[in-house]
Image (cartoon, rainbow, N blue to C red; front, side, top):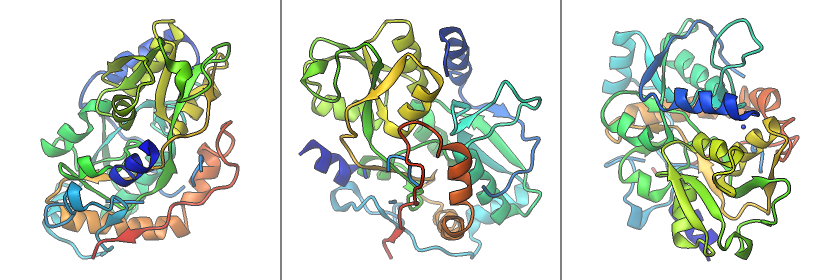
Length: 326
């Protein structure tokens, strides 16, 4: 029942020290990250879509997988971005394989599956030499950053939900995942079930994991933190017994930390989308057009580069098919 409700209303670092540093970096809200590389193009591992006031329907009538039909026509929001000359995007800089910096590389450029998509969007709007201004956004600041105009969009493993559609607009879905439990390998926790009773379980504030645990905690003691990565730090420090988060993120974290594992099957079905301002109908349509092309050429290459070899992710996957509301 919970899985159905969430589906209809919603649609990885190794050492403790390294994680603590990463966590501290993530906590800096709206930190400007310079772009020094020009990457363009690049399904779902565990293995939809969104809209605005006028663009997307309200929660009570919500089909979260339905977004605006794609278009290449410029409107006010796209024209403003072109006049400004750069795209401002909220991202994560500490999610392994999604949006992160590789300390083994000489440059300090952000890279990952989400970052590839950002570059594809920027190139479509601004051309091959597109300028992107990245801002590090904690999990619980994704919606405020959009509503306050700090960013043009957020591309940060953000699940489309009917509740969020009341506040922001979403593109069609570009990735399918589901909530899952991350725990130490020697833990007696077997998944999202009664083995959580009496355990300390962490979730990010304002995340779909928090919603799931509010709906049914199985008697767990719930801890919430501003950023999803903070939960992994607490798990590594022994301050919590388990983490509930998107399985795609959990798999990436388990790939870097050999002491933790995914336990139990995904217990929801969720979809990541690009989040934008509810009034930015022309930008939503433009991003949806980029995604039409990206699913055909770009998505598969990016998936194979960043996610196909992550334990717990499918070696071969496909992006979710788009659905449209008009």
